[in-house]
Amino acid sequence: IADYENGEWGNFRIEPYAPLQLNPANATLHYGQSVFEGMKAYKNDAGETLLFRADANQKRLNESAKRMCIPEVPENIFMEGLTQLLEIDSAWIPNRPGYSLYIRPFVFATDDYLGIRPSEKYKFMIFTCPVGHYYSKPVSVKVECKYTRAAEGGTGFAKAAGNYAGSLYPALLAQKEGYDQLLWTDGKSHQHIEESGTMNVMFMINDTLITAPTSTGTILKGITRDSVLALAREMGIKVEERFLRVAELEDALRSKTLKEAFGTGTAATIAHISKIHISGNDYELPQKDDRAFSNRVLKTLDDIKYGKVEDSHNWITK
Ligand code: PMP
Image (spheres, rainbow, N blue to C red):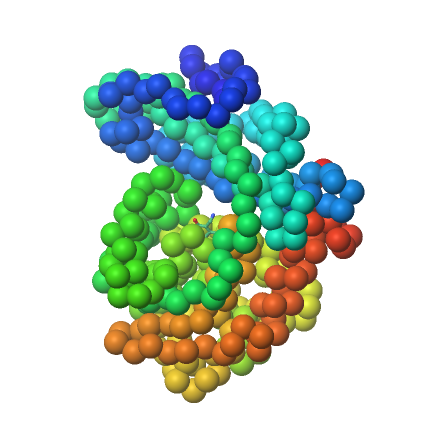
C-alpha cells in the first residue's frame, strides 16, 4: 500500500488483507477515478517465482492513470512493492500445472468531497490471489451490435473501473440468452469487431491471423495480445492487425474459412471460442483439438511463463 498526498507517493507498507475504511464522500465511489491491472506470477520447477511482462503492466497502469487524471506510479515504487509482496505471497502459488498467483495492482482516489475535480489524494494497492485456468472449457460469444463498450476519444484503452461497469448490463443480457461473453463492435457503426469483455480476440481465417488494431484507442492494449502476435510472427504465421467487419466474420463462418477464434488475456491466456452468434444466427466453430495455432501458441506461452523454455524475449523477471 502507498498513499499519494501533497504531490508525492509515500507511507509504503505491507499489511494483512483486510477491509478498507472509506468515508461516504470518497471521490472514487462517486466519480470513478480508479484504474487497475491484472497480472500473474508463476513458479518454475526450481520453485522460483516468475513474473510475466511486469514492466508492460506498470506502463499500462500509468497510461490508464493519465487518462483518468490519476498520478502515475513510478516504476521503482511499482516493482519494489510487487517484489516485497511476492516475497510473502508467492508461498500461495499452488505447485500444480496451470496454477498461478493472480496479482491485482490498482490506484484510486481517496479525497472526501462532492464536486467534480481530480482528487488530491490516492491509494496504490496490490493484492494477490492463487488461481487456476480461467476458462477450462471453450466459450460461446455473441456479437453485440446495439450497446457500445468504448467510443473513439473515450476511455476504452484504459483499464478504468467504469469501463467494466458500463459493460455489465449488455453482457448480462447476453448471458441470459445463453452466451458466455460479448464480442464488442465499434461505437460508431457497430460494423467491426473490437474485443471481448476481458480479452482481446483473434481470428484465423484460412491461414491469416486477424486481430483489431489498438490505434483507435477503443480497445485495451492486451499484453497477451502483444505476446501472441510476436510469437505468431516468429512462427511464420501471416498476421493482420486490422478491423474484421462483422459481415466478413459471418461470411468466414458460413464458408468455414474461419479455422480458429480465441480470446487472449492474462486470466485465460487463450480462450477458445466454440460458438459465435451474429444477428440471429449461431455458428459452431471447429473443435478445440483441431485448432493448430491456438493450441501451439498456448503451449509456447505457458512454457515461457513457467520457465520451461529459454526466455528469448526477456519477458520474465525472477
Ligand atoms: N481487454 C480487456 C477489456 C481486458 O479487461 C483485458 C484483461 N486485462 C484484456 C483485453 C486482455 O489484456 P491482457 O492480455 O493484458 O490481460
